[in-house]
Length: 259
Ligand SMILES: [Zn+2]
Image (tube, rainbow, N blue to C red):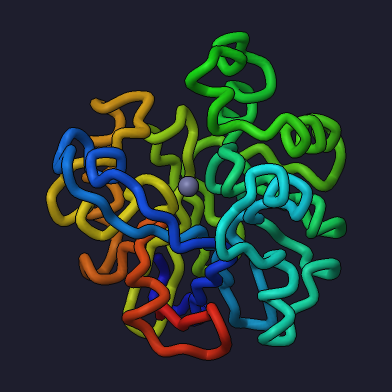
């Protein structure tokens, strides 16, 4: 990333949880008799006159259907720091799982950035209609996304791409076929929002993904790629670690500053 790139701040926004999970789900094949707490998040990247949202959270209707514990409409959480979801112009979707994309209708003006590989798999590949993939899919937001194809509101990203000076999307498959991480120039150097490439910090520290993995070999390569790009291991953020809420400066209820 160019040293002259603008500096951005990164915020974690918890919109649901905590949820208790078997540890073996979050750390692949480890701790079958242990449990761990996780949260659901979206993230904000702010700086140089821009406010970008990374992932959309879960829509209120689906949250109700799933009876999601500790849920607040992500748009309402964003309002606590003066962000109006209805006027956000850029949303990065890291991957097409319900907890990351279901709330897409909360951002009606946004241009949505998603990897072409991810989009084509979830929208067009018959395998995406098989039970293991349907378990983490939301048909409502998927059909909303499908309707955006061919409009100005959808940007299908092909691999690694700098979408603004100092903000680069990085193709990092493994958890899903075309997950993308987001590298951000911050005051501490290059930080990476890895989303569910790692569910918790331990996935990176121990080099073991979660059990939700479509391609273990690709995951190993993606992790090496992110590790090589990030300025320090502490700046590589996972998708669901409760530490993002508990261990960083609080700026409002359920919102912390990560970098
Ligand atoms: Zn997730």
